[in-house]
Length: 410
Image (cartoon, rainbow, N blue to C red; front, side, top):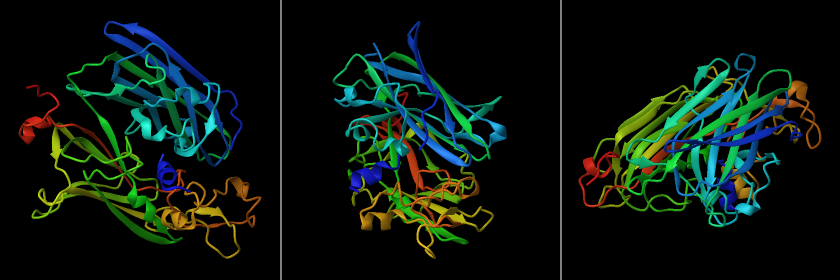
């Protein structure tokens, strides 16, 4: 598997009755676009991650003022959302996406649509840190004043938007279930005086997640403004110069024990920015007036963020990862770095989930459900160690306190 497709992973069933609704309602300063994905079926004791593309007509030059994501929860939380992300597409091949009637089972939308989708995607709405309203988990987001979240238009259809909906649900109950997500995007004309927000994803620490049954492990990596290729981040490269940070947080799955984040710079003591153990509600380091992060150079003291995750597999109160045995006596589950060395897909080297009564341990396995290694993978039963942030450009020629203040206009 090529390196770019391997990194893209850091994004089974009959489609059944799935409905995707797109509506546009005019408002005083723009319009509201409503997207609905679901209900889609999920087998018992399984995850399901699906991708769909929908074209939103007549929205040239718009920005997203606010958004709301509602994910339906069932059976007292045994069935719920692992994540939801809506992506815009700014490439030249929007016609190559499947039709809205197509539902694709594709972890991270890794092979979905044209080959340039991942490098030309823009994260425009997502779930996370939800509040509960009845049986719905709700994430409401608003773009800070002075900044913008552009709704991109593909160059081959510059008056429209192409939105990809990526929904990942888990079903920990013993019966089949369903997933359902509703999204509202409140749009307005783009303001050229605002600075655009870009998403950062750093996933290098995921490569070394490799925790045997009954064990614990720690992974660590760094992110910096070094201009290096980073296929997991928006645009495919890290910023190559000074950049403003709006927020930074971490992402783990259910066997993540602890996430820490330190800002480090030569000549200064490490600055602890995050330290949390709740993977469901991760802490967020938010800078309401922005924070200037200097380029990763010797002159600047090599500034960077170091993020670290602790994981446990059948230890420290975390449940044991189980999986289908492939080779007799060999513990299933191969870590990312080893899969790369073997030229294999990291989407396929995590242990296959057993399902109810080892129902999934059929062809290609011994039929046994056994303790497995905890490694990186797309399922909620696998794990991750990821830094997520939002950045924007500083105003040139100004001191840090003004260069990164979203509300400052010279």
